[in-house]
Length: 273
Image (cartoon, rainbow, N blue to C red; front, side):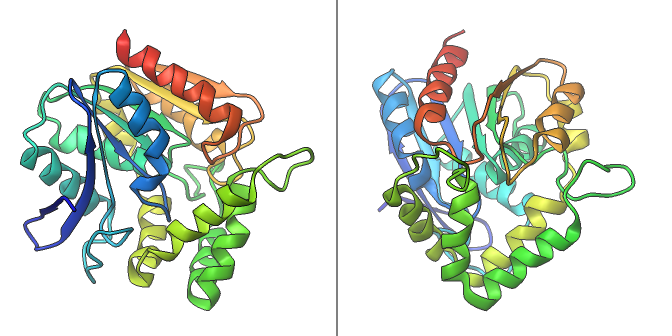
């Protein structure tokens, strides 16, 4: 299996499909690059080189004790981009991955990034504070950490319900989708899963968003129960200079079903512009 090794010795697993302009995809918590399997194929079929990696601590990558923070995640992505000698690349990030690609573009892009797409992304900052009253209270994230420590297997099964909106009337989320979410979650090392909660909830991306000078397509589900839109996409669009916001009415946090089909069409259209 393909791996690159970061400066601190962490091995990062990645998938690399197709030929053409590169598109790098970054996944959410507690998932891995398998979450992008459909998009990887669609992008490769459309003439792009589609690349997705497992974040450190997640999936098939190493599970180091240190470095489970957003700065290191972005640096790991930079190591991958350097190792594969990628230029003129587009970035796609879901949830935590949305923060990762924004930080990478701002701190490591160096003119190499042409476009960014985020979906259900965590920027500008998730946690509630005096300056971010629309945010999610810290007690919610403390509860996530407690659930991961106490019984992570059951916690991931329960989380899949709200992730996909399966707890909404009329939902048609398959059992397979929920179990695949659980499967990917169970591949995360406990330390990495625990530390990543702080990384995705408390990291402030405000200055990075202001610094972006490339087009960014901001996609967000109108019924996102994990990353509420008021503290995320609705604020992000006010901070970026070349942003387009699209709200998918009734869509959950997880990219699934009709939402996935519509988003995939929008991804291909935005990249082709």
